[in-house]
Length: 355
Image 1 (tube, helix red, strand yellow):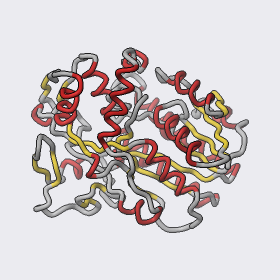
Image 2 (cartoon, one colour):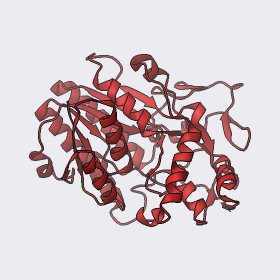
Image 3 (cartoon, helix red, strand yellow):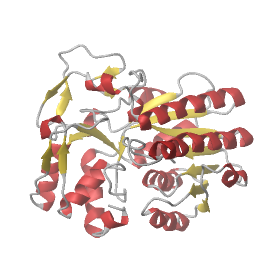
Image 4 (tube, one colour):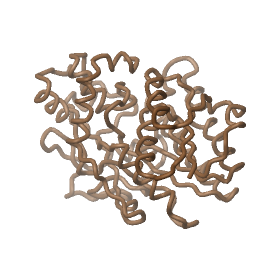
C-alpha cells in the first residue's frame, strides 16, 4: 500500500508515519511538508532514515501537488494547530484560512484525481465553546471532573465528548476552519466517490513534540518545568484545574490502520479519539508530577481568562472502539515518562521548537 502523509515533518505527521511503518508490512510512504515550523528539519531526517520519500511542498499551492505520485490513502496531518491562531497579528486570520481550508481544498482535489481515500485529522476544538463551558463540573483532587449528579448535554457521557456534542458557533477561528474542512471533505468524498474518515483528536502528546503551548501543552509544560522557564496558570481563578486528555500517536496510528482496512461505504464517518477519561490530567496535577520528577517549580497566577479557553475536555472513544475494535494502549504515565526522558536528553529542545 502507498500512503501520502501531509504535514509529515510536524510532530503528529512524523510520529504517525513512523508508527504506520511499524504496523503495516510493505507500506510505502510519501511525506510532504513546507518545513516552515521550527524543528521540522529534524523530523525530515528521521523520516528519510525510515525510508520515507520526502517531497518539499506547500499545500496552499496547487502546483506543488500536481506532480505528486498516486497513492491509495492520504493522511492529512497538515494544519495550523493552535486554537489561538488567526486572532492576533496582521493577516493572521487570512493565513489560518489558507493553511487550514485552502490547503485542504488542494488535498481534496488530489484525492479526487487519484481516487485516494482521505484520513483527516480534525480537532476536539470543533465543539461549541459556550456548550463546553456549560458542562457541569466539580473539583476533585485539584482537577475539574464531570459532575455525574447533573444532567449531561447531548453528546457528552462520563467517558467524554462524542461526535454528537454541539458544534454551534462560537468555536474559535481555528475551530471554524477545522469544522468547515470536515464538511468539505465529506462533500468531496460523496461527490467523487472516495472514502473519507474524520477523526476528532484529543491532545496528541509524546517524545519529540515541539515544545510550545499551542502545539502540545504536555510537552511544553514538562520541558519548561525542567528548564525552569516561566509557567502560568491562566484563567479559572489561577487554580490550574483545567483538564485535557493525552493521546499517543501510536494509538492514533492503530485507529488509522483500522480505518484503512474497513471497506464499508456508508454510515458514520466522524469519530472522536483521545486519551479518554482514564488519560486526563489538570495543569495543577501535571505540575505536581513535574515537581516529583524535577524538583519544585511554582507557576505564576494569571486569573484573566482568554477568549477561547475551556475548563475541561476529554474525548469519548466508544464509537471508535465499537466500529474498529480499537482501544487506547499507551497509558498517561508512559506518555509523561516518554516526554520527560526526551526532555532530559535534549536540553535545547525549547530553543529547537522556537520557544
